[in-house]
Length: 122
Image (tube, rainbow, N blue to C red; front, side, top):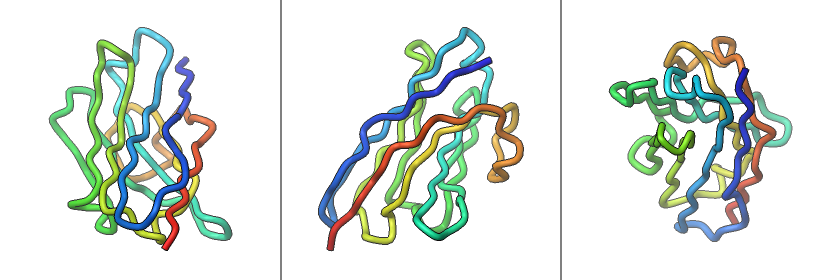
């Protein structure tokens, strides 16, 4: 039983940066893998990044590799997504999710946040 709340979204020009945060409730946060997904209007939800409970395993979508960095602070019950060199194609609602496996498959995640809007202008 975990509740997730995203923040940090907004409007930014192409080439700029944003850092998203996802605050989680519950003392079991430290044992969950945490993932970021995004969904643009009219498109399917897609995987962005995931970090294992220990932080030892990280996966990124090819479209964001080298530009985005996922991290977590278990003491603060928070996961972050640092987004650099943003492009208009990154425009979407970004969701954080918690699950028992560090996977790109959204079906493995049990808890989802409400989403935060990221808009990148050209």
